[in-house]
Length: 333
Image (cartoon, rainbow, N blue to C red; front, side, top):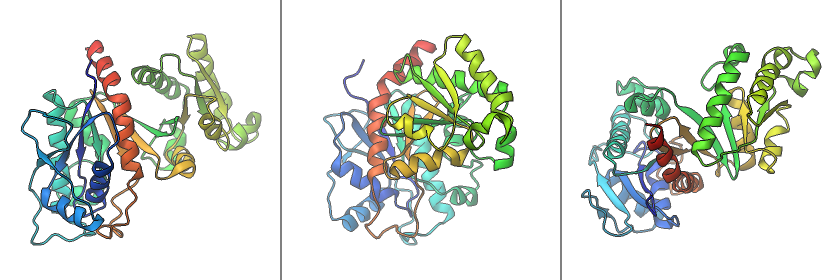
């Protein structure tokens, strides 16, 4: 196994905070991994000037000589019309180009993981790119059967039974079969991250865990039967626990991971613990992919005030997980 993973970092939407947080991250780079940034050198230079730093980029030729940082300059931004904070179709196309290049590098065996800066879903749409976001792009372009989202903040890991669904539709998905299947996937991917004996908790859907059916029947009729079946099959899973406390208990170390039943349930919990320290991890791809938990922040782009911590933490966890995850992928082929 390699001593150090090689990580591709995409610049994200050129008009957002992506270039700034990438420059910040590379300037501070403390990780035992080799960074290869994919973006537009001219935009990155503007970001360096705004922040007041200078990066000694090494052009990427396919051969790594030294620790980097390396740069693949796609030179795909129209600098005559470029403006910070502006959502335009051309930036959506540019950000998509960076993602495609990162996947190409991984498929050629050049990089072991990918860290993505924020993109604009609206800019993607206006550019005619038929994907709603990063996860869908990576799943489709890698031919992956599934793509699970896990949020990581410190040692707290949160998975999501449902993501981009209305609350009413998300509730309809809370069925024994769905919960059982997802928990099995969770267990599988936790093993790929190196957690062979993970202890998993399930958050309840209703207040106070349903109060024995007084506040809802989903816990008794759907969630608990799924948990009981998996316990009988040897999985270390328990719950459902009231959602107002289970995430904090996991953060304290009582559980290795928590299953959140809908988008905001887990997002609110992790971001309230540490907004800038929360990282989105995509599992199910042939490689590890991480990303900040925030968006393009067009309103502050180009002002030099963007907080880079989530990008730094994304790089940290990609470096932590990449080689073990890739090794497991190889053994499963």
